[in-house]
Length: 195
Image (cartoon, rainbow, N blue to C red; front, side):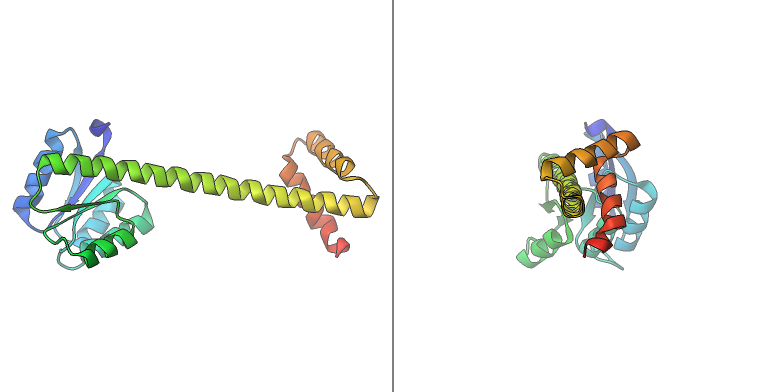
């Protein structure tokens, strides 16, 4: 898994940035970008499209939390904040920005790798939940359109619910279009008359 992960490292202290890069490469990650400040991190995230980012909280020009927020707006990825500060306010801001992990300096490779793995796993869980929510929302919209179309047919044609549904299903089969599309077309065509 780590062989394919591309990592963006944003740290204003050169020695720490080089340490991070060395640890990551030794663990099989590809460091696709190195930033010295928050603005450079945002730009590199757009250019290199990393799989994960490590951002220092306190950086010049743009702090790591605001950089994380901008990176996540453009393209959601797992982000781990790296800082010498363990202050609750910073942690709360980082979590609010959408950060999935937090490392306090000084740290070791044994701290870094689990933080990346955890952030990546949490990001994947959230992506799956969002996809499921989108799918459920779409199914609900389809169900509403079908129910509305059935109601219109029942009222206009004097059909039972089963007969109205059978008619919609038959129209779907004949036209080769999804039931939702047929129902939406019927509502758009006859819905205004039914009011």
